[in-house]
Length: 224
Image (cartoon, rainbow, N blue to C red; front, side):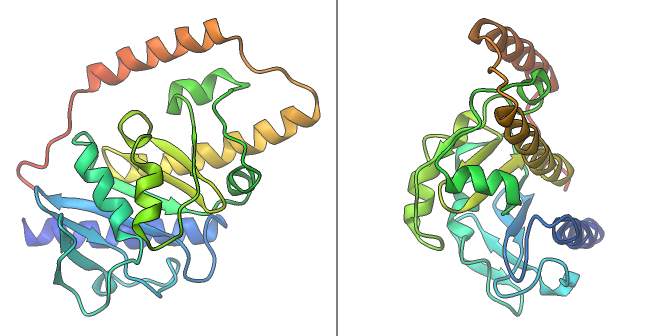
């Protein structure tokens, strides 16, 4: 990989880490971010470091088997979750995990966001399912996500938080923003007695989204 490009990715991860922290999506040392920088290497955030206070040299490089290849710190304790995304989603290059308050409250209450009340969330993310509980930092968490990853760009994790992915780090981060924004709308809409969109309309929106996504093509890391 081009050294200058890796340096840029390191800077971008730190930038988005600060945005996660500034927006209240993480606190303390919560959350983790990773980017695929080569066909078999990912750059990821370290454990026990605030995402709002990271420096580029704090980041860690691991291979797709989870073996650390570079970095003076240890990789995130939830690395296995990221590795599973890259194994099951050849179309993505980045994964973001955070605990945005409203979306995480839905996850804690055992309520998915699969019954949308607005059209925009369907065109942006499709459906947002709720994966079962898995103890953080263990393979239980990855196992709970496994069946949802192939078909979803955003997933609520029971009693835990949210994980999003995308073909770029920007997209993965923006998907996290979309989840939290929509969760706030859904919470208010429930209080006002709004009904979900009719299933036939959801299906039309999903078909339009699939067509748009299909036209985007599959991403590649060639030349990185």
